[in-house]
Amino acid sequence: MSSEPHELSYRALAMLRAVAAGRAQISCGREPDLYIDGVPCCDQFSAHVLTHDGFIAAGEGPFGTLVPAVLTTEGITALDTVAVAA
Image (cartoon, rainbow, N blue to C red; front, side, top):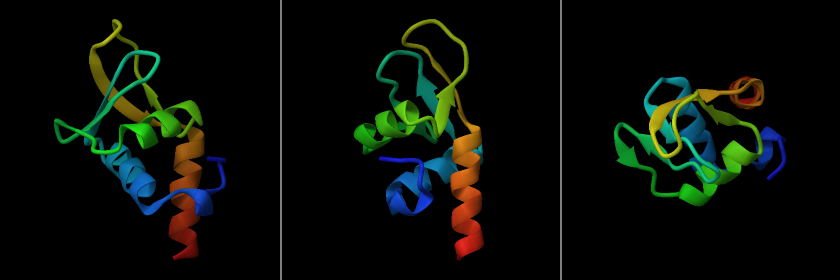
């Protein structure tokens, strides 16, 4: 995936919205798993892509622990661009 918002799937955008709403946690690690409302996300591959492509990030914590997921500048821009286009 690139950072072009129109290339993000509806599911990926929904995941970004959940992170923006403060409803998501992410595990600290190389391949972080995303949890929304305390439930593991059904699409961990997309969670990994969103993390590796710089749309979401994990706070600091020991390996394997759950910490709040946060939007990066790229994630905020992607959501803002989609909102403007709608």
